[in-house]
Image: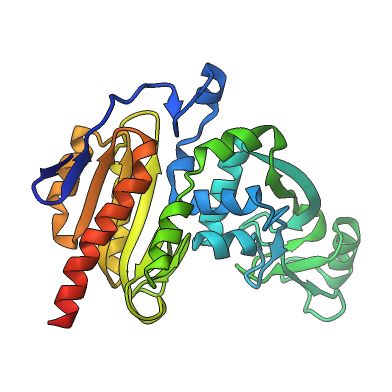
Length: 318
């Protein structure tokens, strides 16, 4: 049974949601307390799924051109910036979902943290206006080579640099069962849609008009390739409490992505504040479905995409 909420918000009726149950499995108090709200994000779920199925075993840091360390594999999967990815990996590590392992320790600029330098040789630069070259060489010998960071062009002596620990991240094996139950399996929907000849990608990365690549739980094209035409994008959020206004991230992505329809599924539902905000932003053609439990998601997702397809195909044919 579907109940329309101002033509944008749809609630799927069913049994009352039971707190302490996620994806239809019982959570212990300890497990419930350890779950991060980050797990509701489609980009984080895509990353954890890759770690869970073995596509990636460990996320290793790489020194990039800007003189900082990044995690390119995670960035590619999540479609996020280096800074955002580092913050999320640290947060997941603090939650115990990921294990942090020391990879190396590097010297960093004390001013901006850059780890890429140019070395100034003591006999190739002019003496300081306040020190003679003899004194300059003595200071250089005591403090080490003089360095200039690539990022901010800050000059400092080697001994003035800051030691910085760089880490790799891997999935905590003790959390595999919990994460496996948390990550929603929408394989049945994907297979059913592909059986109809539609192009489906999950997780899906769609480049917006801004040039930024966004990650969705699912993307569908009824005719043609996804790179040429996207008919619907879907984000799925599963939580053990009502989802707050943070769910509006799909609105921001929807503004940037040229998809005909945008769909958000949330379990168990939205807060009143989030409902009000979604109602206000319904001009961006975002459909919100509230499922009272996760077992309803596959059927609801399939039915809604089929309904949207009929509207979309009819419009295209006309």
